Image (cartoon, rainbow, N blue to C red):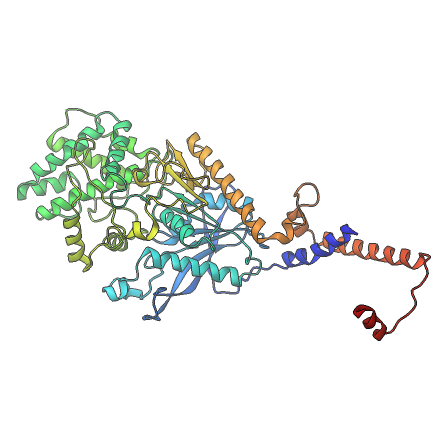
Amino acid sequence: MEAIVVLLFLVPCLLAYDNLQLDTNLESNAVNVPYGLGKIEVKYKTFYFEEAVDHFSYANSDTFKLRYLLADQFWAGNGAPIFLYTGNEGDITWFCNNTGLMWEWAPDFKALLVFAEHRYYGKSMPYGDESYKGLEHLGYLTSEQALADFAALITHLKATLPGAATSPVIAFGGSYGGMLTAWMRMKYPHIVAGGLAASAPIWEFGDLVPCGKFNEIVSKDFEKSGPNCAQNIRKSWPAISKMAATEQGRKSLAKVLRLCDPLKGQKDVDDLKGWLMNIWTNLAMVDYPYAASFLEPLPAWPIRAVCSHMTRSDLEGEDLLASVADALNVYFNYTGGTQCFNASQQSTSSMSDVGWDFQACTEMVMPLCSDGVHDMFEPGPWNYSHYAAVCKEKWGVTPRPNWIQEQYGGRNITSASNIIFSNGLLDPWSAGGVKISLAETLVAIVIPEGAHHLDLRASNPADPHSVIVARHEEKQLVRHWIQQHDQHHRPCLDNVLASRKGWLRTGDMISSPGIIILMIVVVAIFLTIGLLLRSNRSHKPMPPYSINEKAETALS
């Protein structure tokens, strides 16, 4: 009889789980992207979701269309997980095509993939072409508003996609997107069950870490990648200053460095130095063990390729700067199509330097400095007053340097849970990353040979062993979070099917409608046998009694 009760309890649960069809009646565009993921093809549909411009007040009722990409070809529905990428400061398609880990894991987890674009980037412009014109439009570009966008989107998807209501959501993100993933789990734990925050420098604020650690890591990467390389970069700064002291010298400097535009004055020279500093920093971020096109098309171990042009210890003056130009050619002209270098371009056009510059002038204030001794750069102390003055002049805003710590907790985040903080030690942003586990559910994973969120990229035969191990550990943790979520939110199956061994597996039950029919037949057989046995049983029948007699008996 207990078996019949179990089956009667199980059948409606299984019918509910089996009743799944993904609603794809919305307008969408299917995109096929060739990608090195073995047999997996990056294919997704593009959707737009109406979001509030301001989630936190009632003064502005404007709305806009937030773009998101959805891949449902792996999804099993019926409470199978949703993998959410929390979009960065750029076009979401670019991050989608550079986050191979999610595409590789999706078939195994039978997961729905959602890549949500960050407001004010890509095609998610709250005020269209006017979005960057004036604070009355741009003032809604904040991390808090972006997180609220993601929360509203996931709530909508779980409410409208059949079979998604009980799906656990696991967030993924790298760099700023990784910070958003961590903060998403902290701020919206009821919406996100866990998060993989790769190369997320959530402590690169205030005085949480020394401001010089970032540039020290960049310099060590160059020191390890070729003899005299870091030393020659250190020597290049005074060489630039000396040559740029005169108008003729600036003309010669622009020529030797193969710049597209002339250097008209000292400001252009200062901007040139900042541009070069950013190029060396970008190379440290993308020092991957294989050819990649994350920021620019680059060879394997690009710093080694760059340093191969600056190995001589006797380089001075124009010869030294010519070697710097050869090194720049690796970064900007690996494919051979660049005639000159645009000193206003930092990286791929898929990234928005303008949007991030505004965010850095409001809440994303990350103090960085250099001393020229422990790093290969000119001495440049952190000067908040100057920083704030530049932001005021450029954007008309005064930065809030402590706001991120106040909003997200700084180092005091032990009340959070289910977050993986992964950091590659080649990545300069690891200086502000969480590299020591803070609790059993706040896990730090360190990748010694890893550059900027290498673990989020697709598997590659050239991957170092440390990233292979890291991905394995990350996958086990994500699987545990999903199982943990299911135990609390899907008791219908988990309580009845206490074991997933043998033929009585959840997946088998869901995927085999014939099993459901068989169970119904078994129930009917048992009920029939029970009735037959009862009718044949010899016993003295009870005398009939009226309803009134029954009531009197109950009252006596």
